[in-house]
Length: 137
Image (cartoon, rainbow, N blue to C red; front, top):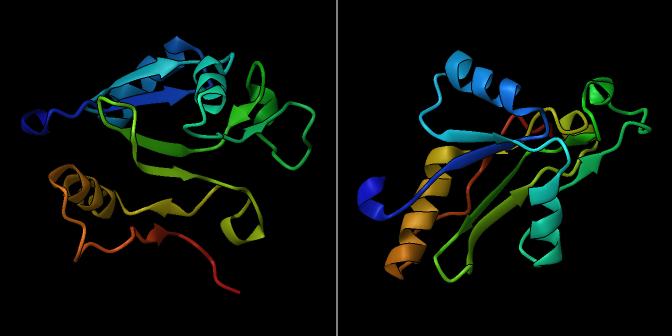
């Protein structure tokens, strides 16, 4: 990916110590940042780039939310270019169909194909990324 001039970062609502553990435990090949105060999520929303959903500690739908200092962010993806133009974005909106945010992630290979196509200026034969683990009723 370095040849594509792309950088990948992970951000979690957990403290930095937990983010560092995740890198080792999951064998991640990118830097992760702990952001328990949701500074990045708040910044992205303020700039109109992405509205990450934050489940607050008072929200009883989420059993694990109390483990987080100021609530738990739902998974999201944001791909931007150097000019801050959004090439791809995805947020988990919790509901019954995705077990309140536990499933329904986009296919990473398809996301990368779409991003590469947008960077090259040709998205003709590229499909919208499908999602893993989504229930259909």
